[in-house]
Image 1 (cartoon, helix red, strand yellow):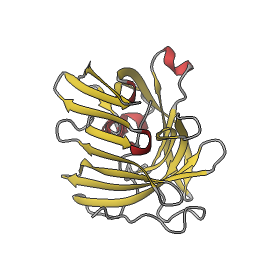
Image 2 (cartoon, rainbow, N blue to C red):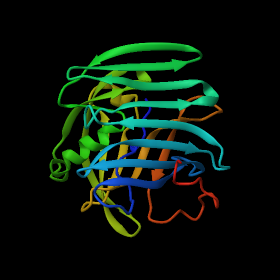
Image 3 (cartoon, one colour):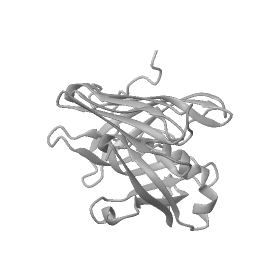
Image 4 (cartoon, rainbow, N blue to C red):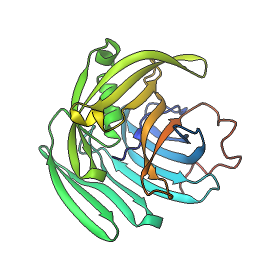
Length: 248
């Protein structure tokens, strides 16, 4: 399974108006060892206060590019058309088309491309769009209601039943952060580690993501389990020279 936030990652701590373009960084660490893994560089386009699309680039600590991802939410606020590439691995995953009842997926690995279509409805989110889905149901989650939805994972060419719920609050930059767990709503929860997301309760901005990453560990070829943070200032152990925010 492969997700960016927010992919994932979504709305992070960026100083910008409701509309326009936002640029900011995400800082990724190994979930177990806390080793710095990579830097995310975001460009997000907003209209009427909604995330409409943009681009995410991924860089190794030495500044070398790892991957590139483009997203477009014009067809559906919760399911973007997107394309994610890791050139060194000749790896591509994508949602190529979003219809009212069907979504088309594509994956290329080891020189072989596979395509598949999966069903979609109003309770379906895809890739980074699950952040938008959580924000749309933020009030219900804050009331500790369980949110059930279908989640499309193009990297697996499949759709799964998922659920989200609130857990105990945490802290981020010495402020209260509400925390949600997102996990499979099936036997898969015994095989797949849950995702954990921390949000600012007032602005609904994503502060931290914990879970499976888009980026692969070159030693294993498997996606990292990462902690990705979106602070106001770079962490002390982040690379001293960061990639440029503007994509040009």
